[in-house]
Amino acid sequence: MTKNEILEILNSLDLPPLSYIVKSDAAMVLQNIKKTTNQIKIATNEIINKQISNNINESIIFSPLSKNESFTLLDNIKVSTKEDLLKEKELEHNKKDYNAIELALCTEDNYRYERKLNEKGINLICGIDEVGRGPLVGPVVASAVILPKNYHLEGLTDSKKLSKKKREQFYDIIMKDAISVGIGVVDSFQIDEINIYEASRLAMEKALSNLKVTPEYILTDAMPLNVNIPTLPIIKGDIKSQTISAASVIAKVYRDDLMDKLHDSYPYYNFKKNKGYPTKEHIEAIKKYGIIKEHRKTYGPVRDYLLSTNKNN
Image (cartoon, rainbow, N blue to C red; front, side, top):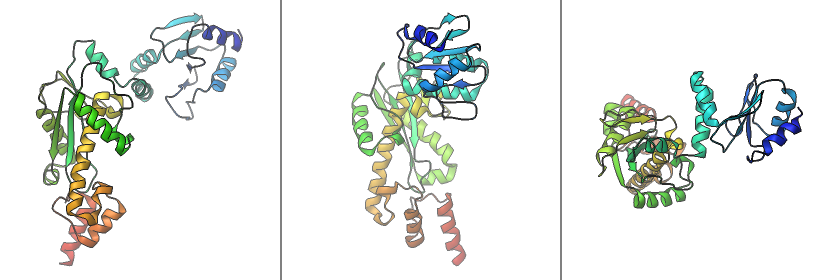
């Protein structure tokens, strides 16, 4: 069978034109999933055509991007979905490909985790995320958000990927639409006492306790919590889950506002611009003006300044 004959069969299935994942014995070629490596290529139309013509006698899998079912075209050609490939990689314990495919699925549908919980009758789902692990000054802030079932806000994703204007627009919409929102703040003194990891967890648990509605299930951005509610930590959760994305936006805008207020008291550090992160300008300001009580004394540049000051004294 020729390349064109195979494509003719695929095109007759009412699939997106040439939007297939191709898998051969040698490598998995995933369109919009992975960049080029020694083993994996981007499945452009040209590569798909070459795969078909060069590997016609091999086992080749075409995966349409918008079908839910699997079916066989010919003895040596199978059409499957990304969900099928995900299950296959899970059974193979192939974490690298599993994570890549799952990220692609969640990028296309960031309500995927929530929908699976809805199918089990779980509707009060809380997303929790924090911001402010890296700054030299100020608190770490977490937000807990419960959105309505089947909620969708076009363009909502990890707050770091959004412009300031878009974050603030989403903040207003989420605060209006959410079933409940909780904020948790842990200041720099506690961060120095218990370390930033534990402070981030504490901020998340505070945010959860400040909700007016008790959730049935919690999704977090990679952080396990010490709570009596079923919790799923998701790596890159602020991208994969719309509910966690919402929490990341609320936490980011809330903390940025706190840093803007701190800027008004200490304008020479330019917190309005750097939000407390260790920019060159911020570090130079520490050397020139010293530190303020809100600086995290266990963080490198601040600790180094304190050591040099003590040494000079």
